[in-house]
Image (cartoon, rainbow, N blue to C red):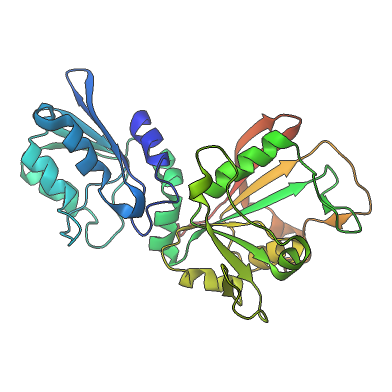
Length: 319
């Protein structure tokens, strides 16, 4: 399952509206097939893996990060049917598919065909891997990641607005990797006017994975190469976007936090003190300090050169 989860990451930010799924088929201790959901959502991971495994899929075990789909599509057959036809003996899955068109029916179809099904293997890791798809299913909007690059005293720029560069090259490279894993990236009008940002991916081999550029502005008119939305809640209307990265300044970050639309925070902290600079956040609507507690859980921390990255996830009951 660990290998399947790693394969699933190859499709993250490239498969919407389908989930980024990974699959591995094992026969007698040998991996005979590997696959992941391809760009645009097809082929599905299982179809790619079965094509590689060929006849060796018969009697094998398929490890898949999401329940094989049970619905027919003009773009391809149901993966549960493909697994049955291939003659696999066992399917090990991380998560049940919340899509109403499958939602347990894939498992039921496999079991009715005599295939053993094991559920909920490394489920938490799969939820994190497919956060975009799952958030869209549960909340009707993309999974929102807020990126903050700050000094030790919480500043994102000098008092005059200059901010190049707070963090070092390793942290900036990691931020570009994160861009490549999102279908869209958003900034505010202040960032647009001050920096004329390209918002592209500047990593060798990943240049083609630049996300859709989105501007948050209630006054901007149509801008070539940009999608303009008037309010944070409008991210739900962006087509084929299940992951969006918010990179705007303090006003944009605060607007998304105040609307409780941030699911994940990437906090890059440089070992510098600015003093009197521009703070990372403005008012986010809290009226009591107690409201600030219990909202965020740290899920990762690492050193990136001289800088420190901490990753936090919003603790929600509904997603």
